[in-house]
Length: 172
Image (tube, rainbow, N blue to C red; front, side, top):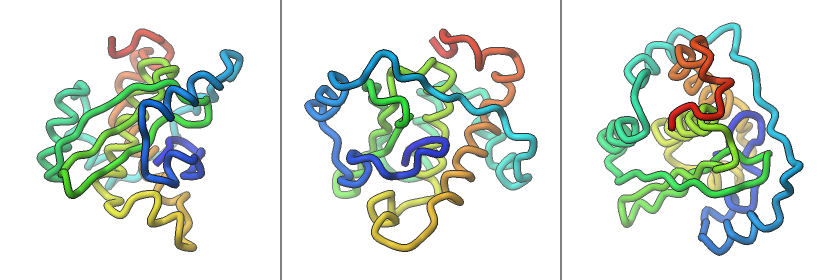
């Protein structure tokens, strides 16, 4: 479940597996010259998404993960690893172990790491079958990605309006 318009085409997402060695290999191949493209906030957010996002606004990462754990009955954690600029984050879930891990691109500024976190939280709340399942079907992933982006924007719009979206130290 990658953020913004990157879709689910990454090898990490397709296999549903991520390891430190794979992340380390990818990090060694990442060019420092790769630049992120940061989207502007949407002009409109669907009212149902605004309503859902309201209870997530103002939560820090720990509080958001605790709320997520209550909702999905899985232990949740984050991992920050360097990834290429077209991958902002993805989620790996092991239902047998009742755990999930949200991987965030450590190269993103902190505001955008928060954006990716809430984007992935939306996927965990609403897309229980995951990227691999949907990649094997003819389903259009754009709707899922659009809703997850809208949710992340709705959660973080106050911080963006306060100017934190342009501050690389956001959230630290």
